[in-house]
Amino acid sequence: MKMITIFESMTGARIKDCIANDKLIFIVEENDMARAIGKNGFNIRKMESRLNKKIKLVEFSSDLFQFIRNIAYPAEVLDIEQDEGTITIHGKDTSSKAMLIGRERQNINHLANIVKRYFDIKEIRVV
Image (cartoon, rainbow, N blue to C red; front, side, top):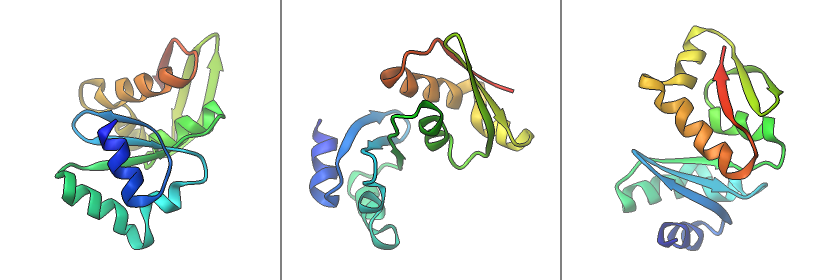
């Protein structure tokens, strides 16, 4: 809560959630991304130096597929399919798939945990 309050007061953007792991991930309300980033990335750089942590911003979307694309960025996603609670993400190439999965499945597990907070899904796969 403290991180959310600090970020909102510094940027003026509305924050939906904050997830702390090796970096801080802020889920920004829809249409507030530009305000959160700031001119030429000023707000992000200021927050990273103040908190001494890397920050990733993700814009929330009520559309499941768009939200997954927002979290997965900068990895290139060709297509996303849903079948009975299982989400299948098709990466553009092997490097995009590797970026989505991460070392020891770290990235895909983070992605699944974030998506499960807002949508009713069972698992996420990358093919």
